[in-house]
Amino acid sequence: MTHTRADMDRELKGSVVPWLRQQGFRGSLTHFRRPGPDAIDLLTFQFDLRGGGYVLEVARCAPQGYTMAWGEFISPRKVTAWHITRERERITPEDTYLKAKWFRFDQHTPQELAAVTIEKLSDPALWPSLPVAQPPAKP
Image (cartoon, rainbow, N blue to C red):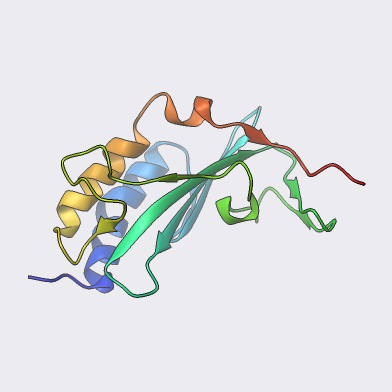
């Protein structure tokens, strides 16, 4: 049976979002942030435009927010992983039993994908391994 985006959203909101809140994240689908003393952890769910899947994009920026290359300042309450272009990383289920580049809810159940999503985001090395994005140098 193929599951829809609505099915996946329901599962994410029912299991992954409460887990993210327990981990200190704020926000709502699709953008979350976790402020800390040294950095803001950023998480974005990027859904496939053609449907049926998503990936996780993660990044970190300074607690003061982020300044884009053209000088636009993004406040700590508005910054998302998508604002961070160079230091952003993509998390896929590739090294799990799913062996895929996307979390495919058109091939797996939303419950399976939610469990793998939490597993990936639970990796204790994930956030410390990400560089804290710095504003681009001014010419």
